[in-house]
Image 1 (tube, helix red, strand yellow):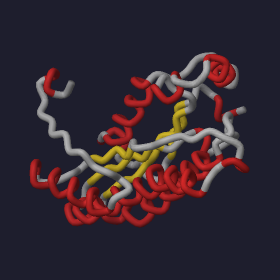
Image 2 (image 1 turned 30 degrees about the horizontal axis):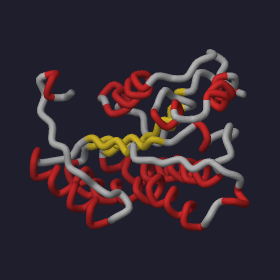
Image 3 (image 1 turned 90 degrees about the vertical axis):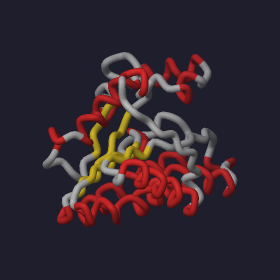
Image 4 (image 1 turned 120 degrees about the vertical axis):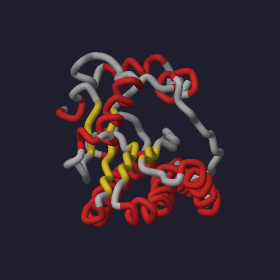
Length: 201
C-alpha cells in the first residue's frame, strides 16, 4: 500500500515477546533510514472467558504481547530518539483499559490498563528530551478480532456505543496520524478516546 502511494517501505518480521527479535528489528530499521522517529505499538491479542477459567499460560501470553511487547519496543527505540531529541510513540490501548469492560476478558483489560500507565510513565521521563509518548483507546472497532465474534456479541457491543456503530480503522488511524504529527507537538502522556462516546457511559 505504501509503495502504491509512491512511498518506500520495508517489512521486518518481529516477535515482540522476544527481546532479541525486537532489538534486531529496530537495528534493521535504523540502518535502513538512519533513524526511527515514529513508532506505533499495535501488536495485541484478546482472550475472552470467565476469570476462573483463565490459565496462567493464557494470562501470560496476553500480557507478554500487549504490555511487555509494548515496553520492549519502547525500550529499544527510545535511546535513539532521546539522543536525537525527537521522536513520537503511540501505543494502542483500549476503552477496556479505562472504563467498564464490555466482554469477560480480564487479562486483556489488565494489559491495556497497563499500557495506559506505561504511556504516562514514559511520557514523563522522555518529555525533557524532546520525545512524546501517547496512546489511543479505541472502543469496539471494525477489525478482524471484533467482526470475528458471534453476531449477537457484536450487536451487544454496538448497543453500548452512543453513536450506534463500530469505529472504523480509518478513524483510529487518523487519530494516530494526528498524535505522531507536529500538529500535536505539545501533547504527551495523553490517551485519546476513539469510541463513539462509550467512554461516557
